[in-house]
Amino acid sequence: MTTRLVVANRGHEYDGVVRDGESWADAARRTCGSAHAEPVPVDLSGEVKRFAIDHDLVVLLRPMTRGDLPVVTQWREQPHLRRWWAADGEPSLEAVTEAYGPRIDGMTPTRMWVVEANGRSVGFVQDYRVRDHPDFPLLTPDPDAVGVDYAIGEPEWVGRGLGVRLLWAWMLRARQRFPEAGSFFAAPDHRNAASLRVLEKAGFVEGTWFDEPQRDGSVATAVGCSLDVARVLG
Picture 1 (cartoon, rainbow, N blue to C red):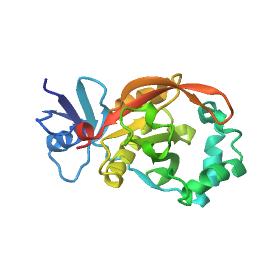
Picture 2: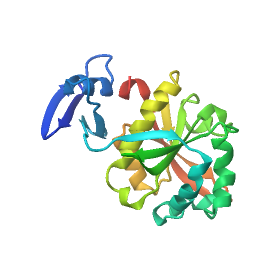
Picture 3: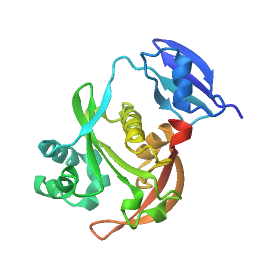
């Protein structure tokens, strides 16, 4: 079955197809016909994979530093994040520093990144090799997958399509950092419909549901979502 795609650019739409052995990202680049413009996904969940070239928004990731922790604490205090991060406890600067400081310092397998939109810090990402966490490989069919969690911290950026863009920026970077990884993995709460939809638009596919113990002793039901790196990114 042929996979179709559309790339939107300055009011025009360019139709294309994915050739045998070609990734969706490479097919989108070929379809737009410009070596100076990078197509980004709009919605990869349907039969037609939709990309666009956004000339107004640049989304990048940079390593988190301890100097970022005060603003990360402010983000964690926002109502739209509190619900999904409540099990980690109250988001005081001391608690956030205790949790994220060792990751920033390279003392744990998890790494932290700040998301920038047009040069402004707007959220964060954390990633890790699934196999580096002994309890995690049971949750995904690929224990060599790279796991990811993300959060949009600035309320005014919620609901504007940034989630797909920041995941794409992370995916491109992760592909370079983990060239041997065949899949990426995320596991949002099953009630977090917005996050599940963002992952779906970015090319992730829902898989197993599982109960995940939380730091506060509670249990949350999460949905394992996986992305095929070769198929989507090449």
